[in-house]
Image (cartoon, rainbow, N blue to C red; front, side, top):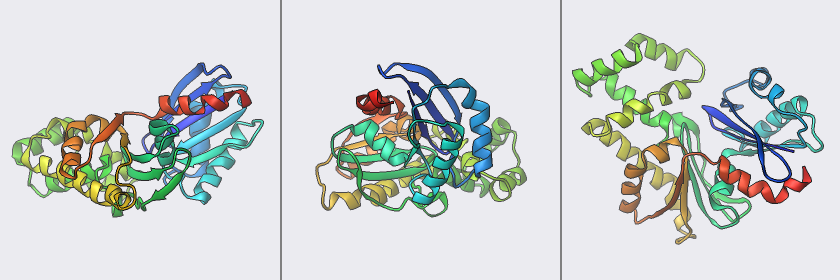
Length: 285
């Protein structure tokens, strides 16, 4: 049987699929980004949330944020092979390849992720043939939940959102300025902490300052993550997955139109498409 995983920085979707394509187990764990979690932390999460709920695993195929670099993919593959002894070694890929295979299957196109992080790629129907450096939320990730909410917090703490919205935020999240700064600068996984404010951002999207944050970020996303591909692939379809793309679809489509783009598909999660993509090889597991 095939154990299939799709992991962002916030959460991981798992499916155990039998040879007929039937899903026997569906569960979630926290995100397993190897840039943010050490091997021991990943093992602990897998033992607590996944290991005792699956059996007879023939192969693990894992798509994950932070797994695009070969060294990080190898680290995670070693953990998976240790905990899930299978007929063949675990296969670990970056989350952007998972997004492309899910959304485009065997067709060419430009696949994008807008969730806790941001990424994009040019896909030929099987593999990635072009990409731009993602760089993470400090240097890039325009339009991601982390960067949108980083900008939100900056405007909030600088006093640019108005007293009413500022008070609403602190009341809703039971935080102080000191606590926020400690979480960002002194605690692990600041990206997940920042992205947790996405519901507040969405609820108040009509506020002029927040509206500006959203549209500025999405424009930067298109300029950095989309336009470079258009020099040589002018008509390839454009598709998105991720919680930000899904919940902010109206705003994202508006910005796309500004760039002369039409978004063919927006899916909240890539797992269903990944199951479809791998069904053709399930007999091998």
